[in-house]
Image (cartoon, rainbow, N blue to C red):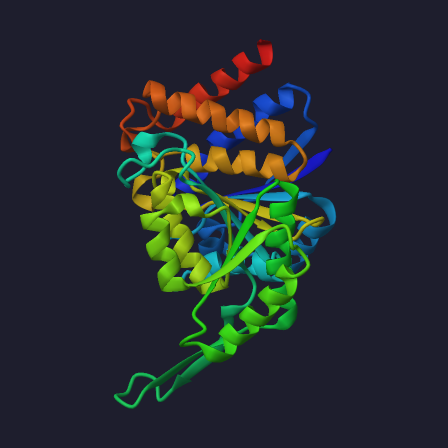
Amino acid sequence: MARIAVIPGDGIGVDVTQEALKVLEVVRSAGVDLTFDEFDYGAEKYLATGITLPDEEIENFRDNYQAIFLGAVGDPRVPDMKHAADILLGLRFKLDLYVNYRPIRLLDENLCPLKDKTCEDVNFVVFRENTEEMYAGVGGHLKKGTHDEVAIQTAVNTWKGVDRIIRHAFEYATKHDLTKVTMSDKSNAMRFQGDLWDRVFEEVAAEYPDIESNILYIDALVMQMVKRPQQFEVIVTSNMFGDICTDLGAQLQGGLGLAGSGNLHPGRTSLFEPVHGSAPKYAGKDIANPLAAILTAGIMLGELGYPEWENKIETAVREAYREGNVTRDMGGRLGTAGTGDTICQKLEKMISE
């Protein structure tokens, strides 16, 4: 049995999570043992009570749930986005979710902005280190608000942190019969951080002699992602660089409306979220694209041990797009709920066949 904590969050997060849950209910009806508990953490709760996400709730998630499904967080009524940071970054850091997993998979050639690229050409994964570097929150201001202001943001990289994300990338390649792992840094400019990443990568790569390994500077990586994405199978990189290159990857696969992700600590409670934001102005209007959330539900099922359902959900999304049974931002004719219903119907058909 897999227990899943659901945090719909803010804005369209509520809308798309509802559709993802509809899809998961179909999966449950087919015999997969899933249970869901919903939690109301988000802007509304924070504005009413001052509560973001208590430490004891994070302990509850760690002890009693196999996964957390997060819709999206962010609300302009909270200018500093404290609640969003406490929820998303709090879960990442306090649950030690050191792997950010982003599959970059093109489902239809018409979705790719690059000329003449096929689904086989855009099919790789990015592993982003998720708990260190610029996101560690080390730094501060001196003389803030004056013309003499100094702002310092320090990148924190540890051998342990670098080793475990690189090792995860090689283990993933081995498990999925892939033959190439690319690491990206900027060691020609960020000498100390780059030196650590380079040394650890070379040490770990030596343990996997059957896998081709190479290193690209981050600027070269993003150029090559656009020029020849088919050369990549597994990419591993730091927190900041991973944040940037995965958004580029999302555009290669058709946009943020199709981008799902997992924040993982293998063997422990992990967090799954669509990559897009909360877009409050579109909330409740039945126009938000739920496919990223639905694909994220598939990623979650794959990590929970049900890869066949991840494949079925992806197939259903691909078919719905080709039929035009998706939201208008993707050239379709349906709303949020209608798109979710279409995916459910396709899965039910697969089950009955």
